[in-house]
Figure 1 (cartoon, rainbow, N blue to C red):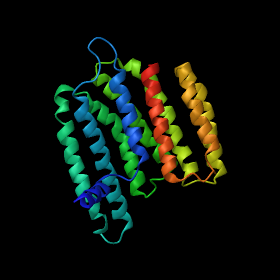
Figure 2: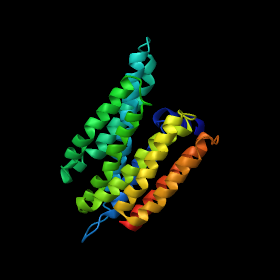
Figure 3: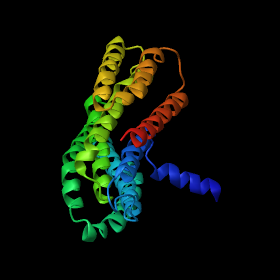
Length: 255
């Protein structure tokens, strides 16, 4: 039974492990950064989080179905993605649609995210999911969730702009950095681009909050020193999880 459950999880859960931190950190930051009289976490954040995660799972499987449908001569090849796509979409709707009665502006938030999801879907259909621009595009709606959860908690959107930009600074940097560690390891062009970006991100973070430059300096060090050292993929993932947690702690303390 345990093996069967693990098999189901492998079938349903996307294998893009780095995406989970990107989905969770801005969301959680927005929940707890809402400030003001009566502002803060709401029970509605729980079904929103479920809708957010299951929506991602549904989009992933739809994109994989489209990609394999286009590439494979066997129309049955992408069938394994149909059930997870439909099941996740149903869960997303069950959790998300009732929220529209209390928070109808969520439709506008979804409309803002739609072009980015559409572009990611196009890249998947073209079998170019690993393209640099595709990764950068995925970061934008994920970081925008900070504003969504902050507003749901009664916070002022203006107060969420700097934390959301801090998330954008970090997660945009993870895209070229992870490439230097895995798929583009050994590429001097990617390495230079990653280090240059992280060097520029430090003063940008300082402009958002002087203390925020401290974790971003650490991100610069890891981008400069770790590529080319034969770090194993699980360790790369663990380092990124630590970096994301560090960002979350910094956001909650500084904003």
